[in-house]
Amino acid sequence: MQNNKVLILDFGSQVTQLIGRRVRELNIYSEIHPYNKPPKDIDAYSAVILSGSPLSVRGDDVAHPDLSEIKGKKPLLGICYGAQYLAHFGGGQVAASNTREYGRANLSYINGNELFQNISEGSQVWMSHSDTIKELPTNSVLLASTHDVKNAAFKINEEDTYAIQFHPEVYHSKDGTQLLKNFLVDIAGVAQDWTPDSFVDETVSKLKEQLGNDKVVLGLSGGVDSSVAAMLLHKAIGKNLYCIFVNNGLLRKNEFTDVLAQYKGMGLNVKGVDASARFLGALAGEKDPEKKRKAIGRVFIEVFDDEAHAIEDVKWLAQGTIYPDVIESVSVSGGPSATIKSHHNVGGLPDYMKLKIVEPLKMLFKDEVRRVGASMGMNKELLGRHPFPGPGLAIRILGDITSDKVRILQEVDAIFINGLKENGLYDKVWQAGAILLPVQSVGVMGDERTYENCVALRAVESTDGMTADWVNLPYEFLQKTSNAIINRVKGVNRVVYDISSKPPATIEWE
Image 1 (cartoon, rainbow, N blue to C red):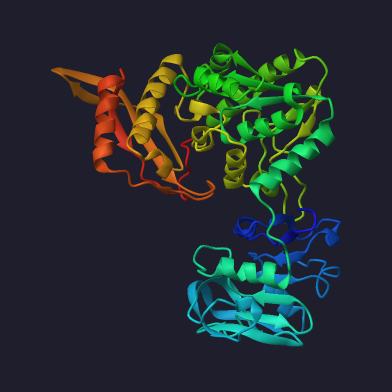
Image 2 (image 1 turned 90 degrees about the vertical axis):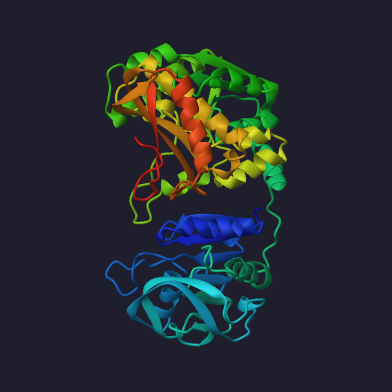
C-alpha cells in the first residue's frame, strides 16, 4: 500500500469522493487531500490526480496548488478544473463557454494515445463546466474531442501529464473506469494490490504495533462500522478490547438483546448497558430536533464515561470513523479542520475523558467497510444492515418522546422491516424505517370512530446517503404492510408512504 498509492488533490468538487472510490475499485489505494494542504511525503505517491471544482481558473479566488514536486516528475491527470488549471497556467487559454457544457456528450475524435486505449469514438462522457479550454498549453498535443468541446483531452509532451475536461468518475462516463485504469496501471505503473485481505493484514499489524498491551474501549452501536472496527481490534489485541453496547431506549424492537447475543457469538468481550430510563428521562417534554440530539449525545457520554472508568487503566477510545467523515471534516477553502469525528452516538468527546483515539476504518469508504467485514467472515446479515441513525427512533418520532410513542414506533418499524425481509426487498433498499407523525386523524374501526396516530413509511436507494431516491415498492406489499400495521399496532389508524427524494428532502425527517 505504501508504494502503490494515488494522491487526489481536491479543489472542492462535489464528486471528488467518487474519484477516490473509482480508484479503489481498481484495487489501488487512494487518498484525498485538499489542494492547499497536500501531504508532506509526495514521494510516497505513485501518481497524482487533480479534481474538478466549482471555482474558475479565471476568477479572483483561483485555487493554486503547489505542483513543483509533481508536474513533470510524477504521472499527473487533471480532471475538469484540474485540466483547465494546467492549460491556463501552462500557456494555453481558458475562456467562458458560450453555453454551459453540462451533461452527456460523446467522444467524436480520439488520437489513439494510450490514455484512450480500449475506448472507442462515440463513447459517452459527462461534462460539467462553464469554462472551456480554447487553446492548448505550450508543448502539448490534442488527445480527444467531442462535438461541442474541441479540446476535451490533451497531453503535455515529454511528460506523463494528462488532462481531460470530462468527469471519468461519474457513472454517466461509460468508459471512465477504463480511462482511470489506463492512466494508473498502464501509464503510471501502479500495482493493483489493494484488497480487503491486504487491508486486514496490514491494519491488524499496525494496530498491534500502535496499541501494544494497552486496553481499548469501543462503543458498539449494532451498525456495520463499529462492528467491523471491533473485529479488526479483536484480531489485533483480543481480550484487551472492551466493547460497550448501550441501550438508549430508542433502538428497534428487541435490538438490544438480539445484537448483544450476536456480538457474543462473534467472540467479542461485550458489556450491555441498559440506560433506556436515563435517556427517556433526559428527553421528557423536549420537541426540538437539535435539542433532542444534544440530550442524547450528552447522556451517551455520561453513560459511556461511567463504564469506561470501570475498566482499569484503559488508554484508548476506538471509533468507527470512516473516510467520508475524515474528508468532510477538512475545509478545502482553508478553514480549520474539524476535530476527529466521534462515535456517531457521542457527538463530541469532552476533554475529561482523557483517552487517545484509534480509528481502524478511517481510510475506508462504506462499501469497503462491508467488503473488509466479509473478508473476516462476519455475518452477512450484520454487514448488510441498513444504516440506522445514532439518535435512533428519537428523530423518527416527531415532537416529544414518550415510552408509549417508542413502543408504537418499534412495533410499526418491526412490521415494515420484517416485511421487507420476508418479501425479498430488504437488500434492494439502502435504508428504510417508519416515522411517527405528530398528527392524529379520524378513522373507523368496526363500528366505532377512532382518533389515532398517523405513521409514514420511508424507503430509499442510495450509495452513500449524500443523494437518495425513494424506492418504488410494490403496491401489493405496501397494501399488506399498511393493513398489518393498522390491525396489529394499537394507536395507529393511518399509514402513508414518503415519496420524496434527497435533495430537496432529507432521508430522516428530523
